Length: 346
Image 1 (cartoon, rainbow, N blue to C red):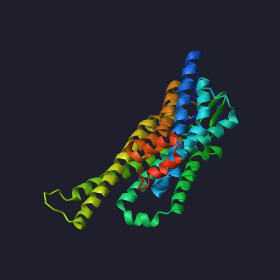
Image 2 (image 1 turned 135 degrees about the vertical axis):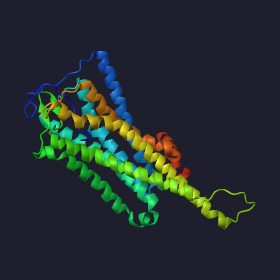
Image 3 (image 1 turned 45 degrees about the horizontal axis):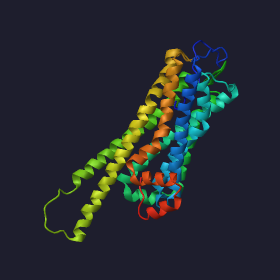
Image 4 (image 1 turned 60 degrees about the vertical axis):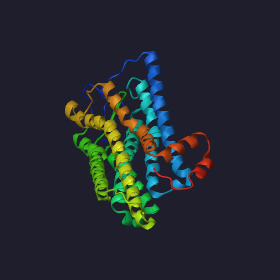
């Protein structure tokens, strides 16, 4: 599943609730523990800071309050939820060498939070890809049908869908493994396939399809542009269409580049974790994890890093967003709106 990754892996066979499942423990010296704690804390702080900036940029800059940019704020909100609701407990578990110290009951709560927040982040990325595709390929119908209420329903649907991924273990389909300082999402074979497909493989396939279609549209638009010719004089009315066509093409190319980078970073961050999560029950059985705890923790943090990188990927492709970040960090909120008196874009 997605954030399916939970705290600690195990080695021996166990009962259904993990009471006989012995967890692996990483032996960390005091300096190693200190270095690990500082590194993970910096990642968490960076994740909070970057996503708060992204939300603030859309909320503070009046010119940024356009429907497409609300999805940027929605993505930042999902990533921020990962940082605030999930990472503190992951850091505590890692500093304990991979042992879960917060009890069996809260283990289920933690897994639910982990799955919901991370799935919401992934599904919002998927929603952004669909939105960009519709905005580029169907500009007239997109503008007519896309309203604030529609956007809110779409974002709400993402969170409802994400909750559906985590509900089965809470209602008897597949029980999470907890107890004996172990906290692991259910390793039931059917649930593992269901959760990983719905939370990762399906949205990834949709994102790939949308990116391919956007890329095709950008190439088609480039081929349709008239070749430059050397004419001594072009009337203003005649020149408007080529300039507008060039502007639309640049917008399509920028959308393709931004979405392609988001998708590439997303795949690098989450694919190793989900491959491991999908294969684990078939390798280790449905009761415990037999994989090295260090490998599992590293792949889990690689996935979380996607929530750190998303707001900075947008800033890389948008000079307006980079400038807004700088002004917000300097506390110049009023200057931001004066500076962007025209169009502000991501």
